[in-house]
Amino acid sequence: MRVLVAASLVFFAAAPAARADIFAVADTLDTTLHSDVVMVDASTGAQVALPAGIDTSASESHPSISSDGKKLVLERRDSGTTRILLVSLPDGAVMDLFSGFEQASDLQASPAISTDGTIVATGEAFRTSAGQGFPGVTLTTLSAPPFSRAQRTTGYALRTTGITKDPVLRGDAIAFKLEPTGLHGEIVVGTGSVFTQPLADDGFSFSHPALGSPDGTPLVVYDRRALTQERRS
Image (cartoon, rainbow, N blue to C red):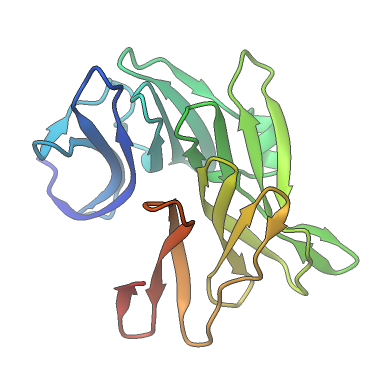
């Protein structure tokens, strides 16, 4: 029996209007620090069974679900390889969003699906030119393969290499974490082609952004971690 010792809720999704269920997906760690994906009915707190083939001996993490509950994306790591999987619910059909060649040449990670289930954002290494790094993410439009892809970059350069991770989409807005090499995590938010300067503070690391607009005003929520504490900002 697997005992869960940690869980990180990464995305909520409301089911269609005909259903009252609200689902949450999360990645969890057991006592051996093996990562798995779970789904919970937030209305009842009961864990919902996922299709066979999702919970494997590999490490599954970074789940994200569409608002109709029909599409789930996640990251699977096994024997040095990283796969970005699109899972159809409830039948459990699994598809790789990137080929092995694509992952070997331009590694994609930490996927997030848009609420309407049409686009998946993935983090990646900074694009580099003349010794500068240009942060961004890849957007994959979900259609019949081959998938259509586009880059969404901040439009400004950093004097370092690094990676982006933890993207989140809401309408035309996007937020993600910057992880410059040797530096703390930072958060950027963009609408259209305009991005904020990184949200950063010496002594703190920022991560896991989420977007909302409860009263029509754009809102970003994130984790801010100091050396000895972690708090929600």
